Image (cartoon, rainbow, N blue to C red; front, side, top):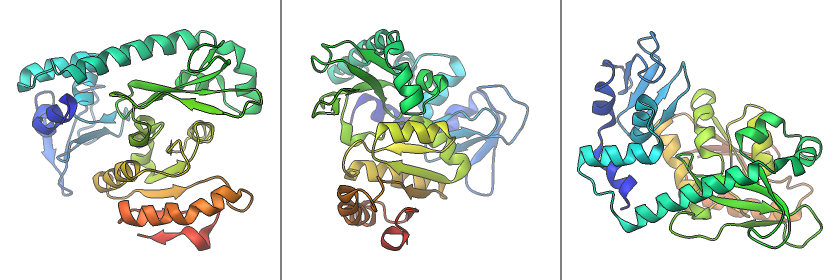
Length: 305
């Protein structure tokens, strides 16, 4: 168990929230009160779930106990972790945690540097991909002239984990090279198969809409998010076991999430058509209980799991 998991396991999020606001139990087993993050006056907009998450229907803040503490105190993520570790007697000197913190810091600085050069691909993103300047800023997209993850130039897409930390990158070449995308290698901080791209943004929208869209690639995901949809990308040919388990966990927490499977069009894409049965099989195995539908290919994929 890593430092963050150990810390979250020790913190009772209800008791943590009660240090900053009065809470009253509701009929669904959760607790409600005034939001201690935006200091609202609505006594039921802020909801704390004993399973370990919170959500504010007014300011739309959401997350786990660390994110709650960070939102209330204004402490950056890692400073919040260290202060909570001290309070809950969890060691933050673990070498993997220290390395992770350093890696995220370096990635954040790199993303800032690449974002300064995004003007080189802004026209492509605006006109060819339909992404607005606001979306470009929100996803912190950037550009590399060459030398980072390959000698060729290309679009840089920062990959953030469920806490919003930049844990890796994807580089998309814009010429006719064979390799379209190259991702950061899996290491002690980044594991592509354990992350859903845009997860930390999508869960906030999914909590309100009751729907989560699942796509393959970054571009489709950002375009869907731009339209106000809760959308995540699995960044591969099909979701991994760990990615399905993330979705299943979200469904258990919110109790009313429908997954919209929006793969590449199986009517025109042979690879996508062949992959759909395998995706459905994995969904039945790892995400039983999650209602799933595919509007593109309903007869083959829709099922009420």
